[in-house]
Image (cartoon, rainbow, N blue to C red; front, side, top):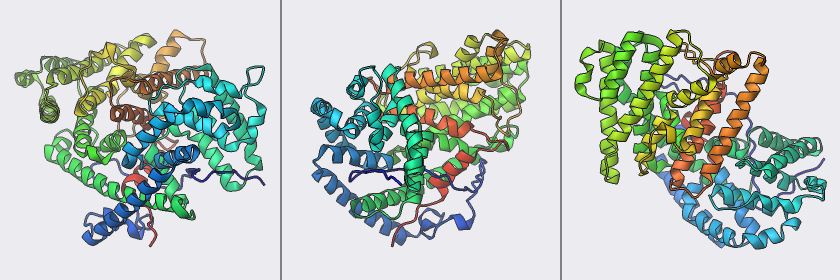
Length: 561
């Protein structure tokens, strides 16, 4: 049997998905059963022992200093790249942001010398491309042309380099519409699949997980958390880095639990769940969106503010889908367009309650942005709510009349009605970003995740188990325009559109735009979260999402004594 030949810092992130306890997406957070909670979970229980928390913080600080020292002393280019990759894959690269930026800048300044020698170092060139591109450094995919044969195909001799083949496969997902990366994906996936029969079982499992869950398309902390549950035998610096990641997860998990409790209390204190019983009561699910978009612990207040925005989006969506008559919805939409307190006078009681929550929440966030960044975006924020309500109203009129709109019209409206542009607009301002125009000129960084969510949701594997209203489907619109098209062909067309949206998102994410890296990461994570949030199984449940929530919020990683 063959094995993968790994350099010093190579990290194979096996992501086996074990059984996960069911998670309730209601305001009452439900912990997994006790057998899934390790002894070290004490820190994240409601009554956290102060001495244990101090012990973890002390060990974390010492471990952080040791890893930082080793990282600083690492001079070899390949070892440097592999260590950066390791830190990123374990979700602790934010702790070394300045050091990583310095080393990435150095690699960029010397990348021509690395490429010149690349034909003899497949591993180094393929990893260099991914690290530089995802760090928004300009690097052309044409660097892979050195690995092509006389016919323009990737050389079959590269198939022996399993590590490099993994890197090539991962790099192919950073595609912005480049033909050579399409070919790289096909070539690498074929060779990795054929190599599995000759590998040791652990290595074959790693290859399969890489093929199923490429790094760029996956949530970093989710893959890292899975990895830490399955790797306890490493030695030396790899073990120290893994222990640092485990302690980091425990500390951040404690913070997230506190934020979730605060969010749940806010929702309960608003009285909305009691007054509007028809609406979804899912504070955990709302918070998970914010936790995923903004993983850095420094954004605690921003996560809470964003979760409130998401809660109101869900609430208004339920009014349009489940409760309001067409006449009532017209009044509600008109009130939001006027954006005046007096506009609620003509509304039914339940709409007044929702309008009040919308008005207060939006003004609260505008004040927060003003205090932190020195300007008040209230006019743009209210405009985003007006666009959302108008999009909801347009859909309500379509469906009330039994009208199936042209697919392009449906998608153009659906990109707004999914709520992503509104949420990301709020997030952009919370992070200190500048003004953006109306939905028709949203940058791809915002419109692409919205397109991905709308299309993935419309694939219709299942509906939210607590949402009974009918709200249309791109598939239905497309198939009415193309009656000769089978359901399978229509779904394939939608998947191609999702791939195209990812390419547009990549193009904007890797460019030197004015958007901050934190906002870029948030937009990417929003797109990555879609598959977890909408992948229902035959029982109308979300097993991937349940495991994700369990690992990141409720099940702490084991620490060595």
